[in-house]
Length: 548
Image: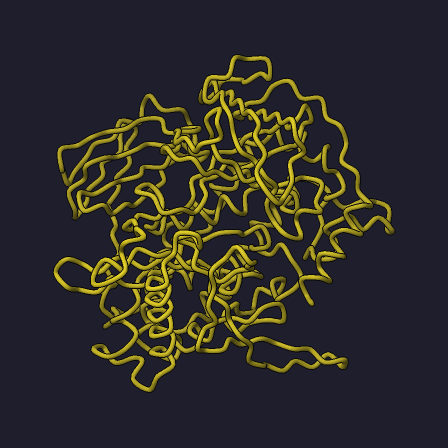
């Protein structure tokens, strides 16, 4: 019912705002030009062509330039649910050959793959909420979707600023888990890898209902709130329904059931019998922090992904990991439902839209988990979650988007506050606030972060002490930045260090011979924020940001 009401409201209000035409000839961002013969729809991909013009860091790209990053076929469809009614559309893209077969390619400096997403920041005036969420998850030591800001034209029409983004997928450069083949139906073979999620679903998805009901708030006509229980439905995201075997569904369903029931059991905190034997505690700690910092209206209950590794050859269990993260356009103070406009609220306690799994509330009843959360959070507050780091990120993107944001906000001027009191705009019914300019938006986001972090500083449960939980092995490196170079010192041998800018473009790659100390030259790099992505010999990855 909530989804239906929201969709109708989106449709009615969107019809009040008509996108303006914008003259578009050049950009400091990469330019993506898509052409199709058929109308792009939300049901199935249609064939088209895509050209990407990317002349490099600091260069101007023109729509008339020869494509130099990609020039080939794609399959494209609309994506989203209620956002389908927005003037700026989101797109799912597959790179194809002329016959419609998937082809893996590297786009905009990102590793080779065939599945991509064009994320439209229509209702996010900052244009970087999704980008920040993925960047933060990556900085925390996990794989988060890489992004590259760009400007897009579709069938001759300027469509605005987008984040060209990796799609969540099993892949050695994305969710790096074992491939599960149809014949893998018993023994160690059937144990992984899997990707599951809690999200909207349809008949194309293979689902199962959790044995543990979630919590959901209900409001009565007098404004009172009661908490009720409701079913939580899991979707098996990988393998796809067409490839999934009955034995494989039975295995992953049983594993998720076992983990959720264990968390609710009397012995859930027991080091030998409890949840730490079934889930990767480090990832759950990070996922909790990431979600609560974001105050995401959909947090824990929509676009909530998990993956399970294959059991190890030595007989040890492949655990259930929380993440990767996805879909944060309603986060960081950007909407007015699910308590998301109240910086002193908690996501894990649930709200009125969809049921929230009980496991998060239960995990916080374990002092060891709370201590792990608190100590990890305090560590992050010295880095990626410091006010200086967040300001640096937002300032960098504000500079990067300085020209493009004017085109975006001219094209979709209805998202800004109007002087007409009767002009609500298509996003006003769920927006926590409206601004008159991009500069005002960036200031609002900075102030929101300060308020939210101040609340978490004082109210996050636990103590900043070493946790007794197993699996809490956060990989980190020491970084010493000088005028001409940065020295990376790692407890694990490093086999590769990439230098990328905040827009996602790889500027340099070093291949140390399993060294624990690597010097990264900085003097020839452009000014601004750069990210050092460090890969260790055991496959772990951690990123660190530097500013020149």
